[in-house]
Amino acid sequence: MQVHLFNPFYKSFGLCTLGSLFLLFFSCGDPAAGSFTVQNDTDLPAGTLLSVSLPTDTECCTDMKLKAVDSGNELELQQASTGEIYFLLDAPLAAGTSREYELVPVSGSETTGLHTEQTETGLDISSAGHPVLTYNTATLSPPEGLPDYYQRSGFIHPFYSPSGKVLTDGFPAGHTHQHGIFFAWVNTTYRGDFTDFWNQQKETGTVAFRELTTSESGPVFAYFQSRHEAISLQHGPVLDETWDVKTYAIPDYHVIDLTTTQQIIGKDTLFINKYHYGGMGIRLAAEWNEVDSTRYTGPMQVLTSKGVTNRDSANHSRPNWTAVYGQIDGSVSGVAMFDHPSNFRHPQPVRVHPSMPYFVQTPMLEAAFEQVPGETYSYTYRILSFDGEPDAAQLDAMWEAYASEAAVSWKE
Image (cartoon, rainbow, N blue to C red; front, side, top):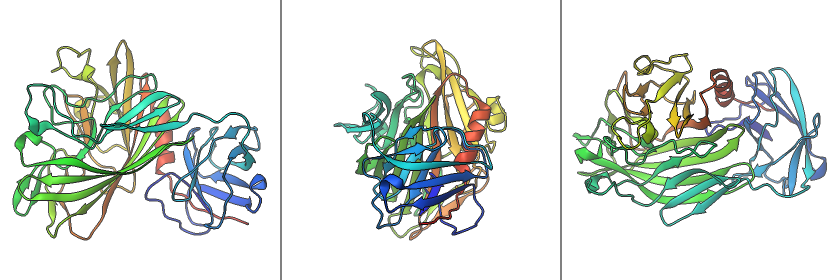
C-alpha cells in the first residue's frame, strides 16, 4: 500500500526513504475496521489532495468514507480507475505530527462533488453545481470578421473563480491566437523548416483536439484525459500530446492539476529553439486587456514566489509559482500556476508580458532543446483560481505540499 501527495510523477522509493508523507495501514481485511496514520515532514495545508494505493486484491472502499479519529470529521474519498483512493486533508497537519483515519460506512446523504458533462462542443466541469471550467473539444471559430486560421480546439476556457468570475479569454482582442489555458511551442525547427504552433497567423502550425479518452465525476475530483496533435501545416502531425487533468475544489480555490505528455509522431526530431516564450500558457481575463476597449477595467497585477510584484521584474524570472490578479466586475480575482519540481529545467523561467494579460512557462528561454522520436516528454503544473488578492504565505505552503515527494511503510 502506498500513500502520496497527488503527483503524476510520483515514484515509490520503498521503506524508510526520504519523503514528506508516511502512511501506516493497520487493518485492511475488514473495510469497517481499516485505519491508517498520515505523518509528514513538512506542513500540509487543509485541502491537500492525498492518495492511497491499495494492494490489487483489496476491496475496501465501496460505500465508505474516511473518519479522522481525533476530530470525528468525515471525509469523502474517491477511488480512481487506476486503483488509488483520493481524499482531501480535512485540517492542517503540522510537520512532525500525525493523524489517524479510519474507513467507515457511508452515513447521511451523498455529496454533490465534482461533475463532468459532455456537450456538443466540450466538457463542462462543475463543483456542487457551480461552474469550474470548460474544456473545448470542438473546433471553435474566432469572432466574426477574423480569419479562419485562428480556429482552435483542445484548450480550457472559461476557467472560473470560486465566485464565478471568468478568468480566461478564448480569442482575445489583439492576440486572437491565444486561447485560455493552452500549450504550444513557438520557435521550432522540424524537417529543416521553421514551425510555430502558437502563432496561428504565421500559418506554419497549430494544435488540434483529437480524442477525449475518458472523463470521470466523483465526490473528490473530476478527471479527463484527452489527445491533441501539434501540426505542421507543411509536413503534417508532429507531436502526439496527452492531457491528464484532475479538477477539484477546496475552500477559496478551484484547482486544476494538468500534465501534458508528448511524443514525436514520425521519425524526425523537433528542435525547440532558444526563445523568449513558449510552452504552458494562460491568457487571462478580457477585463485586464487594454486592447479590449469594451471590457477593459484595469491592468493585470502579478506576484511571484520570490515576492516580485513588478511585471518587468517578474518577466523571465524563475519562481516556483506565479500569481496574477485584477479587477473583474468590481472586485479582485486571480489565477496562480505552480511549476512542479520534476519539470525540465525547474524552476522554469516565466514569460510575463509587460502589458497584455498572459504568462507562459518558458523552458527554452536560456537554451534550446529537442524532442526526439521514441522518447516521452512530460510537463506538469497546478493552476488555481481564487477571489481576492493572492495570499503569498498560503500559496507558498500549498506549493510546498504540491512539491513534496512521498515515502511509505505499512502493516497488514
